[in-house]
Length: 565
Image (cartoon, rainbow, N blue to C red; front, side, top):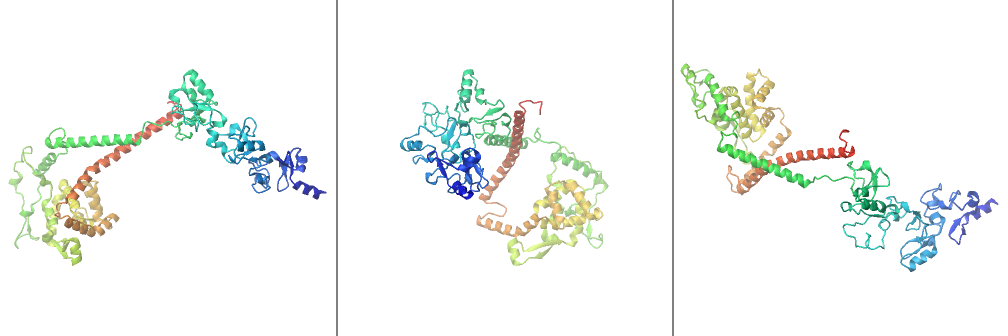
């Protein structure tokens, strides 16, 4: 008997004119119309193809032939609630009533959607609550409840905003009909970009207050421009919660405003600097002139020191002597008492030369490689690339003592010492070339500082200062120069070769740049200060804008209660 019942229950019994599929045993078990899952369990027919899996094998939501959503394969529609639905070939909609489907095929619009009052019919024939349409949640399986046709329904009333009428002006934008309600633009001129419900629009018009258009049914909510409601504490929190971003009020800042302000400040600053320099050159004793940092002040102090200290001997006054001379073969002119007692020149009216601060005699030894240095002959390829046949190796032994004495005098004058190293760094083309001289000077300095290299570097840092010059000097005397220096030394021959080719191509003298190079340098030296200052001011103005944005955000989050923050 049970086998007969099982066979009987496996056969679909069609009731209600073939519109509903029920199982008689499930009806007896559930005491209502029921449907049997593929695994044998029973569920109410209202659960069949309702978007939720109630059968353990999920057959109530399956699309295979005989499953819950495909009980009538020849209908071309899903079997929602276990019922047969009818297909309208003209629109592609499904209806629960065959008469409605026929009417859909014969006319432009069916008179009956097949759903109850307060319900919305999905395109596939399923009925949902009207409050579920256009709520930004896909309740229909085909997502038709969130389509433009559902959220922007066509209105037959003339003058109203519709999605297809095309007769809406800018003052009446199209509004979405959220949750089946009717939304219209706010009637107040200042709030016409806000869509709100009819109730709040009428209230705003009657009170003449556009702020009512921002109100929602929930007093703790705030209405976006498109009509959607969010919590009030979500406004101006830095995160756009409205789809149109209307909850984040824009600040009066734009990138082009910051750019224009930066450009104007930098331009005015550079023009003011040029004007000050021009006035300073024409009238150097005016208020544009710095008396404490001027060269006259330094020369005055230097002359006062020279009046009580011996000066460095001039290289031209040093000459080799005969066998009666000193052991080193060098005779140095000394200063007698009459010269020491000589009257100190009038500093105010004495025309000092600027080159007195430069150790010319010592530099002459370093510069004249042919007379004072031991040279090493290069091969033909190296000579062609480097442009010189001989390479200086070391200072000649006979001139080391002269150079040492001159350097000892320079060491007593911080200004000359600073100028010496500044000249050497600017004059040499690479760290390797600079190290040839600085290593010699390190040996001189070690005799003063007890053979301590650290003390030598401390002394140099004290006189030269923490600058790029000092950085280059330390790099030249270090055992391992920096990676950039080593790469520069490696590519220096190639650079010189390219430079030589460029000079020959443009027919320019070695000491004179070509016209193109002059234009490039002029533009470079003009634009680089402008670009550097622009970046500085732009960064400063950007930080000020960020501070104002943070302040405005805290002010909005605190309800403009400054006592909180």
